[in-house]
Image (cartoon, rainbow, N blue to C red; front, side, top):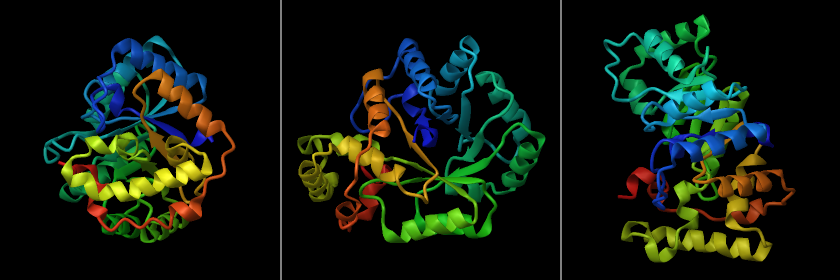
Length: 288
């Protein structure tokens, strides 16, 4: 199972998620990366806009030569009309101390569609060996359909979790699999919302209480905590290739690894009976 895990790098460089964890310091970041390596997790997912994430990962790699590979995402604020993408990505490789990236991604569908001439440039950069795979981060179902039907991406990255798992999305992911487009899923903990006390939900999020309450009932009945349900659920899906999650401390990471290595039977049928009507609230950018 651990070969299917990608460590999320947002928490390594900035305050990320809904639960206001403090930003990690360099020592804590290095402890987490060292623990990842020692447990056979070899891919880190980061982005150019994740604070100091790339710089800290680069420092770690230079001080601790290992087999870590990196996926990163283009800054959506770049001037794509005038940028030399090959030089830009080479500069990022210099930051992290690697000869090539496992993958480089468009940060969003909007970023890609507004600058799709860059796709050809990325293909050329891939052919030159600076990156191995081209990816894109997506949210909307219709955008996922457009990408897998009309473009030759190597992988897509999408949200998928205990509540964000509708049948239409699953069918699309199965099509992607048939087309040999790898599927990486993120937001398995819904950015920490599954662990937040209902008392601290803002008014906009109140409609989600009933669904998370139902998950808590399933958790109680099955005697499997929410964290274990959330992690193991996507890992057992054959239409998902990689699961991405981030951590805020070493203790949390250690618990996650134990969950991944455990033999837990997940009550999929009960989870998938939960149908969220307020689907827009499953997108964190709609929470404010």
